Image (cartoon, rainbow, N blue to C red; front, top):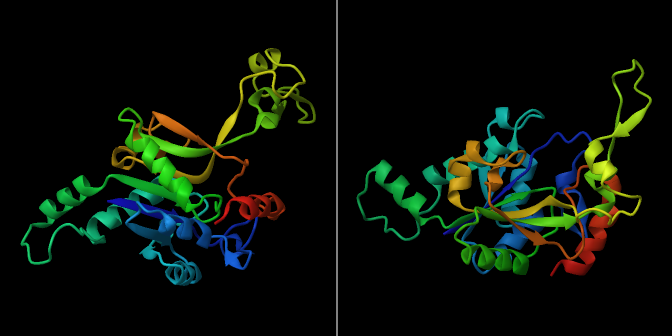
Length: 262
């Protein structure tokens, strides 16, 4: 089986109510849900949240709701722990599908059968709507062919934001008004041409497909997004995108949706 897990919560400070903000008459959070439902490979779509309003919207658009604990719905809570909670919830409450209700099995046996029956998990964010069903299908097909990979995730090219161009404020002279290269060795190896160093890609959080061990052994994954594991395939976006944290990002989001959502 392939499960899709989308997560979202109330309380955004940068863009209040962002998850229910409408683009083309559909809430932001509905896009990843619908994309997963449109995939020919995804069996079930879940939405983890503590919000009554988001639960209503998730169910309206076809997701199964997971009640997220309040301690995992704070500014300090990590997505790592939210994924693990959702995965564990599915292990306890999700359907087995391949086993009849009339078969008498112990809880531990059922759990082990469920674990063996999970091929992949899609991990998605409510505020990252830039994915569609055929992209998900293609990502799954690519991962199926690669035994070495732990996961595949959408990535966007942003050479204009290369680490070689980044600056930070100095803190060693008493006044935080002067800036210096974030990494001097990277700056010295580059020029003013944004393409003077290697192409730079960011995991844009639109979608990732992971093997179960990435969640079961989260502590072994590569920071900062440990749920991707260590051997990660990059799936290039045709139009760069990002997760939506501020209202000023909506123009770029609209541009992507108008050209890629179907």
